[in-house]
Length: 129
Length: 229
Length: 276
Image 1 (cartoon, chains in turn brown, cyan, green):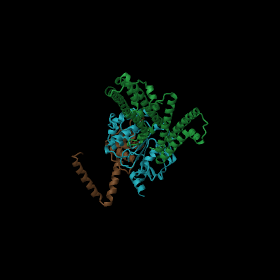
Image 2 (cartoon, chains in turn purple, cyan, red; image 1 turned 30 degrees about the vertical axis):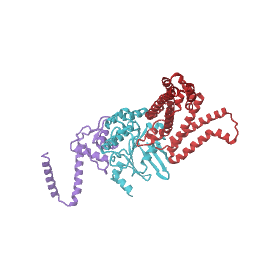
Image 3 (spheres, chains in turn cyan, orange, blue; image 1 turned 90 degrees about the horizontal axis):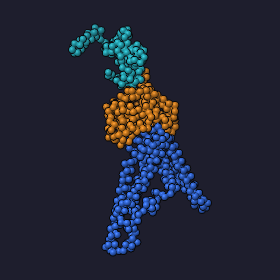
Image 4 (tube, chains in turn brown, red, green; image 1 turned 120 degrees about the vertical axis):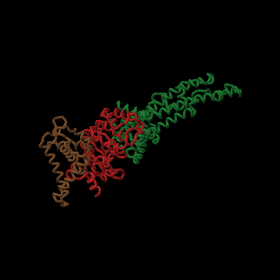
């Protein structure tokens, strides 16, 4: 686990985003155990209080749950997990649109470009999909 | 909690500290930041009663410092506090002889963590390893508060990384840490609280996550604003 | 208490190498002195008696009989003692300043020990005292050994055999090793007082630096004045209304008082004013 944090967003927000990405991409599976706060802090080289804060946020959002002293686990709730994926996609689309709108490109053109790009990258990765 | 209340200190006519006040909590890493020569080290010395102040008061868990306090709070200065002719093992033995809060198990663990050899003489160690021994001697005490003076200065990058790792590990646990530095890069994501000093006073005190969340600024952004104006 | 003893032990250990070297120099030099002085006496005696045909009695009348006493007056004997004294006087200062000097500032560690800081002061004082006693003890053990060596070299009718006690009483050694218990207590009591007062002056310097040098000097001056005040007052007034025994008791009381003042002042300085 290696995350490059930026200095201007709260670290805990970046940690939560990192977890969401991992959940959305299937790196973290439903019900999978996640590291303790201390382990996470150590792995990401962040303040343990920040790791604690991130876990608290995720718990409140229902992304993870902790039973007494057992390790925290990723939720199995399909709805929450689906929402994470949608949220990430929506976020990416938002920033893409915000970046592309000032250039005045038509929707058809964009879709075409995206299609080309996708196919090219798939080929480069040796037909990964 | 460490409460520094309105302390002032003069060296001759020069005022080094001019009404410095702040608090540092247990379980938090508080960083005293300032361009060199703003009295950071003097503040740590004053907290440990290693130098007198002209006015003001310092409380550690609501008490003035006394001999028993040294089992609860320790200070890791930027130079090693043991005799150069001692071996690391002898230095550890010295600590064990005098401190009830010495945790031999943790000391041994740290020795391994830092890849140090007990039989090595302190005078024969590299700068980085000397800093690690210095850190070890402080970290192996079961104290509530740890003060560190520039633990990253003048040592190689790998030693710095290793020392930074300590902060995120169980070695710090729920202790309160005050660390002075003039180089923020190594620890920006590690610290909870920043106290910016200039000309002997606290010019800004903030929580790092709060300033990122509410103002979208990095610690360096805030420093730039404060020191450039 | 155990921590105090550990501190004393630690302080002794820090000077032990030099201390043992000084003891080694003393032993070698004094024994060499006995051998050299004895041999030269014998060769002088032989030369006078057998070559110049001076009668034995006349030789003894001018040269005296050989004894350890003759050796004690030589540089071989007094030299190393002077060296040891000089080293200890130097160390009275260095025992403090070494903690501040160099990159390794051991004073941080000492001041951060979870013990009353006055224990640092007392442990250094006790260390100095123990080292003095150590030297004296070595000297006491050396004297009989030196007598034996002298006996091996010098024939019976050329020498006077003396006990260690006799040697001490007839040489400078009597200042170091007084013959009565009272004198012993007095000499060493005054010594302890002097060491403590110098320590306090050093702590003034360490607390206030340049200003402290002045304060320390004033402190030393005051203590000297107070200690000798009974004698000074009588000299100035030209009235000698106290018996020697009364002055003696007064001096003991003043000495104890000054030791207390010195300890109390040092306690205050270490607690409130000392700076690393």
